[in-house]
Length: 128
Image (tube, rainbow, N blue to C red; front, top):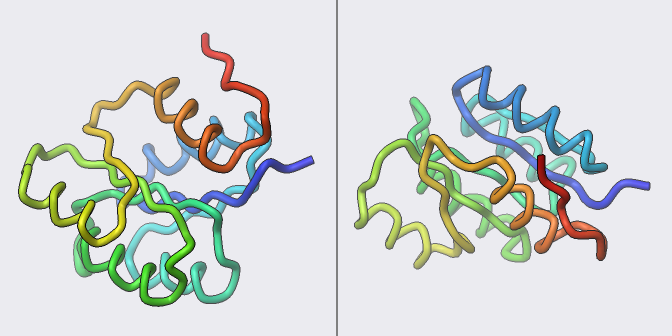
């Protein structure tokens, strides 16, 4: 039984594949997008429970994607990921509705725990 629907948005193929595999193993239904338009297509056509969203994506950046997601469906939870430590962008993302952020490189078990707490079943993420 699937725990919930997760959309992974990152322009880096390796990050998308890593997160997709980890969360599929955890029992989530996963969708991926390499850019803002793909992400918004998923949000419109197959709305996820939670979006893992990279802050820096060519074309439409993470903040812009976040704002569009919240306009389409404010109940979708969004976690921002960034390799950059711009505090004002992170602050703006939280003001726009992001529930939290992770800096790259991130601790995969920490992200798993947060996602499981947010949309998973009552099972805690088991690390290792």
